[in-house]
Length: 321
Image (cartoon, rainbow, N blue to C red):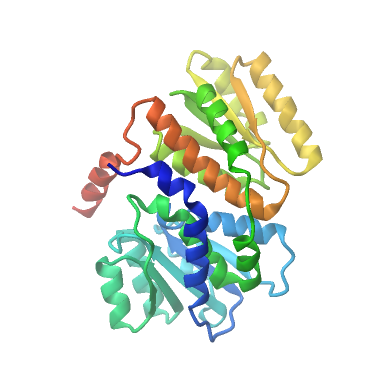
């Protein structure tokens, strides 16, 4: 039986290995835009890099773009001369990722491929591209710390080294996991983010939906105060729990406290604020560690297989017909 908890608790070794391997990739071309393309667990940790870059003053002034929407050709907005594209697919057979990879080849982007095999690896080998294998795990989302290390190392070596030397208080987070598990149970989650915490919310959204199977809606404040409140007021018999990712901006944080109390008193929806470290390096590690451990713990408590994605695979087969 796969010991997921052991994999989660070993985050530091996974992160450091990703940084070490990412720094081995030679990037001879200067670029302004780092584009990271992929789906789900193969790319989700790139949101943490984007969060970190938004909070740290960088000399290089490079920008990060994440592409998960493959219905429209999002590569059109980028100039190939000043862009570096990372294509990430654990299996190497994700159809959407293969589509954008072929388009990137056609347009002659500088490409780095992260994969463990499949069609993507074969096509990348034929084109003599840089290929970095993703650390093996029972699911792509459990390679997230490794990928965070790789993405950060490719983007900025100094950031990667600082991340490597960052430690978090695991005991404190484990206490938070126990408390949040009792709070959430098997209820539907209303997850609230602000413009400053959107990237962090993407991590919780993926793990709570995929691992613990708690249906989680990722919602924006202040939009919620305009129209979602009305619908919630008329659907007060549904078992909702609200999680609000706290904001480092004190003015916004005070408003989130008001939102929390309003939900509790007026809508009768139990609400918790999720507070993370004020240190940006610790905050992104805490976010991923908390999301992984919390969702795994919820799956155990609710007697749910944390790795079951059969319905997702069924839908992919329907799309491929």
